[in-house]
Amino acid sequence: MPPKPPSAPASSDIAGVTLGELLGANYALVVRCVTCGHTGPADLLTAYRRHGAAADVAGLAERMRCSRCDGRGGTIVSISRPTGT
Ligand SMILES: [Zn+2]
Figure 1 (cartoon, rainbow, N blue to C red):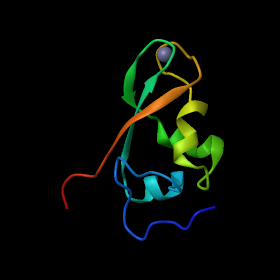
Figure 2: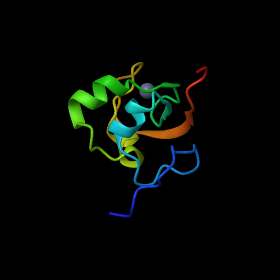
Figure 3: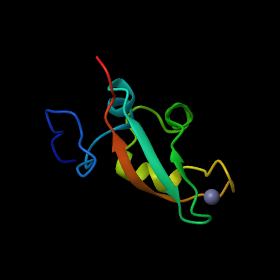
């Protein structure tokens, strides 16, 4: 495992970032389904219950289920930073 970056993840740099870190920072993860093309925010809480806080975000998208077609497999479109505060 590569060392984790000391700062919050950027959308272009999610290597080594875990689901727990993403949730802790209140980031929103946008994923596009490879089956139907549906794009939307990933259900991070469901993923958290299913895969745990240590799940690698980079590998998570392809293990998520699409909310529209229930197909598995997706690609990360963006990670949006929390707004406000
Ligand atoms: Zn889909």
